[in-house]
Image 1: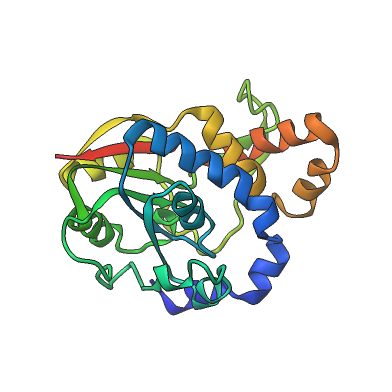
Image 2 (image 1 turned 30 degrees about the vertical axis):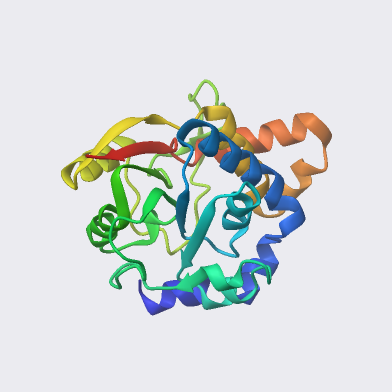
Length: 239
């Protein structure tokens, strides 16, 4: 991944986003529970793991989990209990630091939109996954967000202002790309589980944090907006 991209996810970024364990972990634990209940993985890799909270969630559930991220700052700030299970790698061009066919499940959410060479990573995901292993992928839309996020009628402008999001595409594009690399699209992560993850892990700047303080209605609005600027989380099986 480009050097400027990894530098974007530095100490200032994480302090500004208030990406803290007590806020992020409950929803990520819910995601891990849903994936364990459906696929019963024994080994998991989270690509784009940030501070490793999802890795921690899987390990709390008894799963042998590891993480890879482009930000050395993020992995250095992980919980001491999981620091030895997290690795730094430029996944745009560097091989994943794992042997072939050792994972039952690979998560690649919030990473594909940052890549200039996503096909390299897709080939690496296939390499480290076991046959019949599952990959979960999600990222940013290219579409505009609307005020009426449920009806989808009124233009609200682009809420995604992150300059590192250089590779945004609709879901069908990613389905074709994964299938070209030897995967079969098997469905989506349940919408409610995906929303619960977005609710706490991706604040919409100051406005999002204000909504979080408005009780259940504010949290619901914030979850709808966050979900509106991201695709569904897609599930693929290695064939």
